[in-house]
Image 1 (cartoon, rainbow, N blue to C red):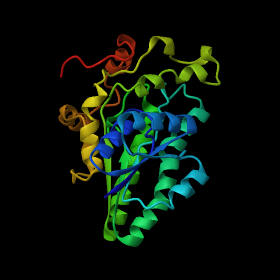
Image 2 (image 1 turned 120 degrees about the vertical axis):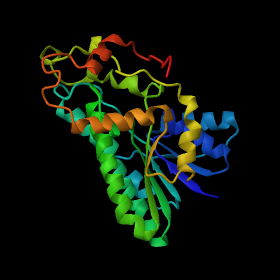
Image 3 (image 1 turned 90 degrees about the vertical axis):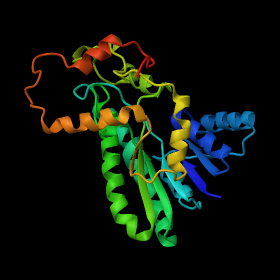
Length: 283
């Protein structure tokens, strides 16, 4: 039986994948940030009749990371993350720092401890939950995208460094799914410690700039990657987006700095036009 540890399993895509993997017979250690989330997940697992091991693990807490490093884990899924919505020009420094502490520094430090045991036994799999915006980017999700770009570089580097020890490294790149996570990021400016009058943008007028998919449709695909059914390093788990993402990622080679200068970017306009929690209506 494979033991899989998933951080950030209290909600969203990580939660759905954890439940699916338990149903498939894997031993899953579902890690959540705090004890209220732990209790809620206990109730969820009991209601589904599932034997799910649940642990409190805040990836930014050194004691939690040290405790997790003592567990025997075959597959580590770094799913914990937050999203700080807002324009790069407006986000306060402490909020930008928090974005990277949770999404990058904490997961890397957690991985270092667990990966050493994998290296010692010459086997293991490490997966970083990235995003489509870890490959591309978008307005008002730049801080989040930057943290995922960092994870992409870390994962690619670790894949090269650990291959001689038999340790696999991969990334999962979900598209936008309507779990509440993306829209919550656009509430972040309400708690910024700044002067709203000095902001360049009025966040009461903006929303997440992408239509979103129904999340239950992707739990199986994420679970497949975690369970090792994909041998790809990068796994875009919204297949209908894969070709478009590849095409857009090549445009940086031909785009001029003056393209559209002085006009509002199309994706910025979408933030004004879209309502929160807008579902994809057609592909």
